[in-house]
Image (cartoon, rainbow, N blue to C red; front, side, top):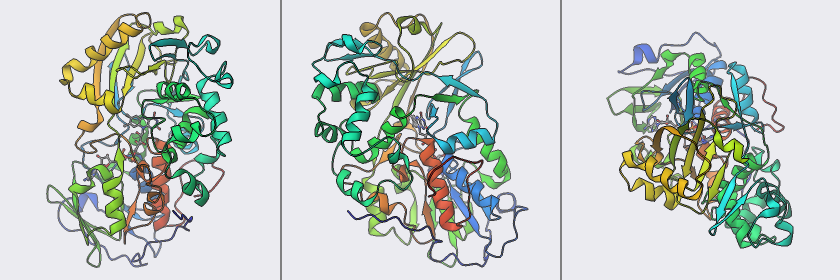
Length: 494
Ligand SMILES: Cc1cc2nc3c(=O)[nH]c(=O)nc-3n(C[C@H](O)[C@H](O)[C@H](O)COP(=O)(O)OP(=O)(O)OC[C@H]3O[C@@H](n4cnc5c(N)ncnc54)[C@H](O)[C@@H]3O)c2cc1C
């Protein structure tokens, strides 16, 4: 598959004129001209979706003097940043749970909006694999038949070496211009497991990697999994936002101006067959603009009628992108009692068991309680989804307690969140399947006046950093001067 970095350019059809008119619905409130900018090339941009991609795109264009309107299906702002109160001033996260210091955009936006942070521990897990248990803190005592060089080092450290042998490193793969053509050709058709087995990884190392990173890790397409692991294994400094990660999209929305949002507005039609581009929502509102930035997850794009119909490449990309189902089982405990067992962090336990992985996000949250969630994917998610919602937490906690009875003290409250059951996304993360490297080029090409954003239009799917990168990319396709907030320390420009 050939891939070329394309210079970002305005899409065809985006002229310098401002020929917009609002028809019907919230036109009075939502499309009131913002008191910004007077450039002759001022455009009216309709942003579909108020998650991090849509919000960062909207704010950067607004700063350049364009008219922006954000149309969001839900009654809330934030998309997959969704914070859940746990009482006693604590919050857990149903979606995006943590950030790391190797995420320059996230750092810049958090700093720009002055949001206070909590620090979290990186993973020092207990593993249970093939019926045997090993402590992350004591690799010398691991019971598995690892190769000689896999002994006495941690799973992240060894993975970093395998990536190095495969010509990769955790820094380069996070560059927004990666993958280059050669990497795309080389990695497009291979799973991560096959890639690292090819440079010496043992079968049981791959199982430990799955215990640490989630069951999907070694069997997933290398192209998307490597940047994912690079965030996890390239930096040990974790944080989340005190009072909930959702405070970040909320702060950006306030900066944009709440009057520029239409909430509870499910887009059902995007029509660019006429002189302007027209967007209609299920409740009968209509909006007209020069350009659309769509962050609607491809998993629900089939609910949207598009005129003219998608080109073959876009239709195939939308249909073939793969979406995980993730279930989180949330628990608040009397105390972070696992610390006394020398396990902690992201993850604090993992294995080839139905409970899959436990993530400890307590860190230095005040109050003295413990805060964890089980993070289930694939067949583990399927098994728990087959149960009634009310039974899910107890089932998983019971399975976990059977395997690791000494880690939790009293469980004070539980909850669960199933991403495949959310009608506005019906999944958790989207990415190219094996052999889907061609999508990397496709999602960057606008479809007429429709520009694509959303973390799933980057290889940093499942990360807010990817959502921001995609939002800025789409904004720059409309205005090359669109800029991020703050002063992110990114080494390469998009
Ligand atoms: C379980 C889980 C764990 C995660 N953990 C982390 C983590 O630890 N760290 C991290 O950085 N990231 C994490 N993420 C990823 C992070 O949450 C996402 O990268 C980011 O929030 C995606 O933003 P987005 O704008 O691309 O998409 P979204 O937030 O999904 O926004 C899309 C928006 O489009 C709206 N929409 C859908 N259909 C329509 C329609 N027809 N009309 C109008 N609007 C529509 C949706 O309601 C939604 O608001 C996690 C995500 C999940 C699900």
